Image (cartoon, rainbow, N blue to C red; front, top):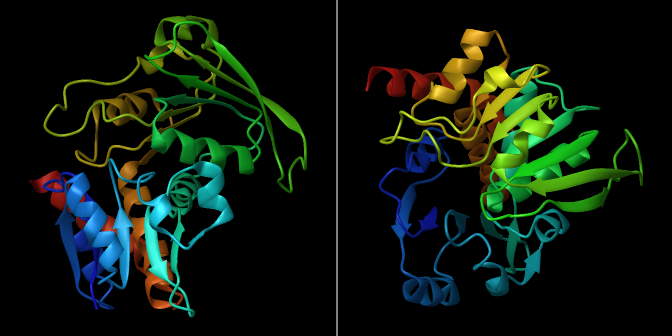
Length: 276
């Protein structure tokens, strides 16, 4: 039974360590070119896979079924077979992000959210904060020259079928958005080995009451360190990484309860990063 991670470059991945700590299966890393990916997926000689950059959208046409969540986000990070042997795609990055925020006690409901970056991770986080009752969403993108305005429909217990504003703008326009309350880094800025950078200066955002950094190595990025210095609650990308993996394990095996391992694995990997 083959379980593992597919992506283009996987030398930095900790997925094998995380999954094998669950004790349920052996897990391998499969760095693939786009040509290798095609034959790998068509042959279907695997039981379950996680998907990372740059293939979270590429794998969608290979699936027999896409979950409504993954379809709405437009990205799949977990592939598994259902009882009818159909290849299914879903998104557990969504679960991982919500777990990280809730574990850190960072509120989303009725908050003005700033997401830095507009890639696949942004799409997942945008859907999550929308579902959790965000009041307004701002997305910062270096690709955008003039602001793009949207209204997103919610379907949550907080405000069913309400509309909230979502604005995508350039980083240069962020000075007009200094009242954001939650700031989320969905870019690789600050990731090892380029650890000297941070995506924005948190001290400018006078209402900021929560920070999340999708980067998990190093554990204390420059972004997270500034949040600590300013006394702002923060969540590390490590919690998201682990929680999305344990959520994927439930799809792989059809069993529940893997989330109970989250805290132990997060603690062990945090110590590994801090002593490396």
